Length: 103
Image (cartoon, rainbow, N blue to C red; front, side, top):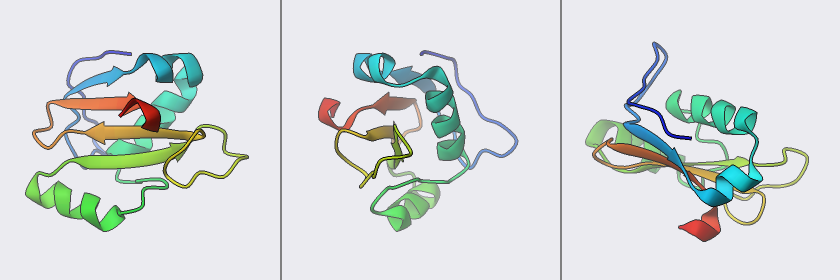
């Protein structure tokens, strides 16, 4: 998945170029990727362990990390096999959808 710069009227942040790793493309449905990206851009950080850091990053320009369950019927601790990460870089040039083991 690769798109140009995108924001919506409900965006809390710029996303820059949106890219997904091979692992995400092989593991996650397009619906999951798009719904998770929509949550990320609106400031719903999912199962991220440090939501306060994301809020600071919105104001100070730091990196933003969200974590979402791939299968909502299974637990997601913000890392591990059932987890999709979305990272927006500090300079807001790129947002990457990746699996934790691809970091």
